[in-house]
Length: 89
Image (tube, rainbow, N blue to C red):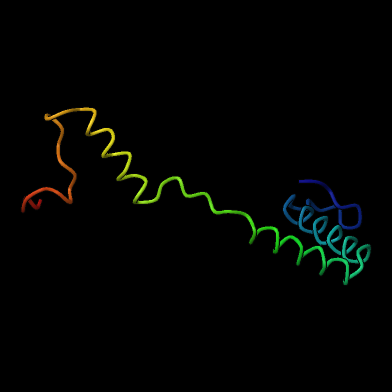
């Protein structure tokens, strides 16, 4: 908390932070041309859409890695759920 000179009352820090944030956002709004802001936003969206989605943990990839691991374990390995015969828990 800090003291506000005009009221000599403690002012919550969150209130001060919100005021500062609002003031800085208003300043930023005044400094940027709306057309330029819109162009930059469109470019950012287009760039994001062009990025390839990382698919490390897809179901197919997990099953492929599981099959490789199970093949390395030999006959003692537990078969994948899809290959188990009617044993439901």
